[in-house]
Length: 409
Image (cartoon, rainbow, N blue to C red; front, side, top):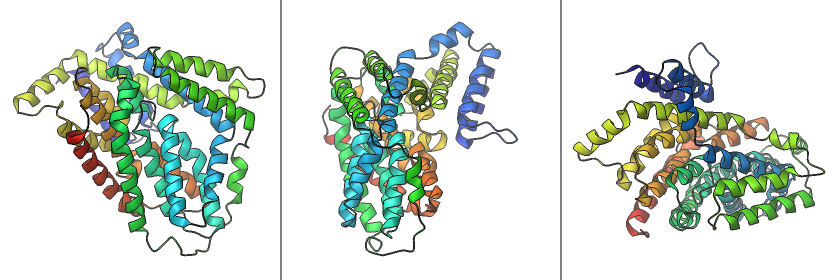
């Protein structure tokens, strides 16, 4: 194997492990170091590396982060979570309402932000009512992941798939929303079954009122302004205007504020994720220049395996997503897909998102919920998570397989 191939393998192995022994590198740092190594080794020139970065995808992701930051700073997420918490007198209905709300918001906004804003409010409400927060917080994490599968802007990997595959927003939604809705219902029923003895049991709970002190207060004008821009943006997504251009215009409008400073908004932009995307673009393109992906694809076809076949693609996606995380997995797998076969792209989007529910580290949203809950003294153990995460993922993938066979082409 050539040097670029070894660099790629080392980088993806580091991404899978999440760290490098003896160093303080995280996944983003490892990907960035791998991209630097590709350039220094001569596998890709600096101009080629710059050209490899899909700027429209990064612009879309960046602009949507600004839109989501507006709603977070305006207290919209906090107010919505408090409104849902008023249903706590009916535990199972509260679970359903909170999951549905999280899923819908995650479909049009960042699922990570939804979890970041919802977790403290739900945790405080549940502890105040002396309810066990674990099943409800698990529902929040699972529903946010599932809901984000329904649209091209629900999560970063879908944005990438939509941009690289040149997929239409409406057709993507019509294909991906049904399996996401079915998976959401399955997740709710499995949670009710797994925690059937917890819904009316009272617990001794620590005081968690301090959690609300760190959350933005509700500002009606700023929230309405953000929502109006989101509605307009969604309407533009159904027009020929490029998504990244529409999103950039929306972000520009929101930055023009007399009350909300641009510094406060830009502090909520996930620069680490943007850096990860840029580094992965360079890594994967450098590997492409070696001809290795084309050789692998030819070998698979020679063995009677075709990644364009949705069932095989879904299985490989789930496996790879839980090894290296879904964004690096998608970044690699899109190179094997044919733009003329949209079902394969839809399958990749839904499968990579559903895969995030398997284990706690499968999704950033999961980790956000677990860490935010821990700050309030609530422990969500690995065992508690996989108790529902594994069956929810299996049922979700079964539903996806059924939809592939019965759904529209």
